[in-house]
Image (tube, rainbow over all chains, first blue to last red):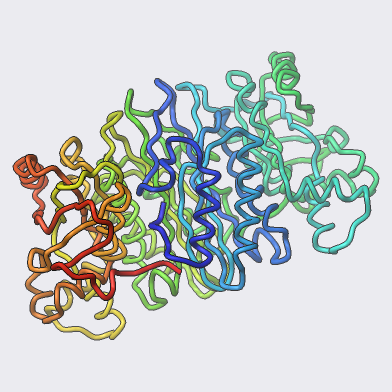
Amino acid sequence: MADDPASGLEAGLLADLRRVARHPAARGLIDDAAVLGWPLGQDLVATHDMLAEGVHFTPGCPPADIGWKLVAVNLSDLAAMGARPIGVLMGAGIGTGRDADWASALVKGVAQALERFGVALLGGDTIRSGPTSVLALTALGSVPPGDAIGRIGASAGDELWVSGTIGDAGLGLRVALADGFGASDAALLKRYRRPVPRLGLGIALRGVASAGMDVSDGLLIDAGRLAAASGLGVEIRSRAIPLSEAALATGVPAAVLAALGDDYELVFAAPADRRSAVQAAADGAGVRVSRIGQLVADTGVRLDGGVPDRLGFEHR
Amino acid sequence: MADDPASGLEAGLLADLRRVARHPAARGLIDDAAVLGWPLGQDLVATHDMLAEGVHFTPGCPPADIGWKLVAVNLSDLAAMGARPIGVLMGAGIGTGRDADWASALVKGVAQALERFGVALLGGDTIRSGPTSVLALTALGSVPPGDAIGRIGASAGDELWVSGTIGDAGLGLRVALADGFGASDAALLKRYRRPVPRLGLGIALRGVASAGMDVSDGLLIDAGRLAAASGLGVEIRSRAIPLSEAALATGVPAAVLAALGDDYELVFAAPADRRSAVQAAADGAGVRVSRIGQLVADTGVRLDGGVPDRLGFEHR
């Protein structure tokens, strides 16, 4: 943790963080680093994602939701690898236009997500980042040696699965941008602002999925990346893509919803003879999974036999 | 690591990072997270510091120096705890005004520091951060259980030590701000832009130092924090503060140099009967250490019996 600021926003932020960082490894955020007894014989799984104002969240987004999402998107990366989350380090770069209340609400959202998913705040840094806020988080988890699920490992003929429902968060973003929504849209907005990482499913899929990742940029593009990592292509049936009641009610086609992104569901491959093992893993985790296609030798993404107009969000 | 961008600056940055991230734990930056076999029975030490343009570095600072410093300041936190560094995750938030060459040079500086200190790039994220650049880094290290050096643990009567020389980096900052310097100033500028974490000394001080931390905001304020963590105060002799030839040549008093900060030296306490053990640790690490004062029961910082005008940099 950074040194104690004498006063002002950073001091308040540090006091807030100290109330959250109760795990002994955080050492009360007094020391220069956290010290954590590591579970014997377990591999360490580590990921780091940033969220920037104006890029990953709108200036008007409630700060508690930003804090939640910062934790959730990183834990989703751990879930994709089949890792059990242990702790996080947070980098809070607070923009010059933000006040202590905004920073405090941000930490509240972080704390809510950490409590929900049973993860410790181990340390971090609080700075003034310039004109806009830039947030960073490192999530640490454990996995038994050799059990991590990677993007590489699928074979042609493996079936393609996805968890939960697709497109809700992308629709929720549209709700947020329009800045007005009715009762049924609140659920979509929540899917966008408060994603739930599929941690239990990821752990249950160890030894079952041949390859996997989380869906952040859109189901189609991410399924294509999963296949490409193994030198394969993927065929997807649009009618098999799982949609929520709220998404169905919008009338937006599945092919469009599958290109929206921000779902933080898991997309994964498994041999056809593990179909019941996949279902058992999902049942155990209490998560719906849907079989939406298969991995094939021909590279590229095909939806209902054709090439989709748009796969999803590409970083430029 | 983030998903593969299709083109542009982020794609080039990811390609650069892939050339650096050759450790198998990084999995070629293909997966959502790194997977690292953890050294059996060792505790994990984790720290996270951010650097923001206009706050921690000037817009005109050479990007390779920024990359070096990003690594060095985080490794300095590991050094302070007596940890052995293993790997880092980097969050590169590139400002809109920066081009691919700037980002590439940034990564080059990161790579130079990682190679110099024998540390692996495990993963991270590359984003467009808004108007200014904001960089984040998480450093992971190991320490035998119970051996970590913390800020708490000093006793009244312990002697206060500091490594290296004090004030060079602070003078180097003045050189950078004036944007012109002669031959003798180049060494000071280098101390500011390319700090060297005292990793070997930190490890050697396990079981020797009763408490310690690194000097980032200024020797006086940081020594005060070290003492305060144990409920103590500190008395420092200005004539004992170690100064380089270049610093002496400026004629700036030691009391001023000790309030400048950015030194990234280690300040630590040790019982008087461990004086020879401290010296042996320093000799083994090839680092000069100086005995500059002692921990006392009366709280606060006293320099030559008086209270200094200014202790160092306080975050506001």
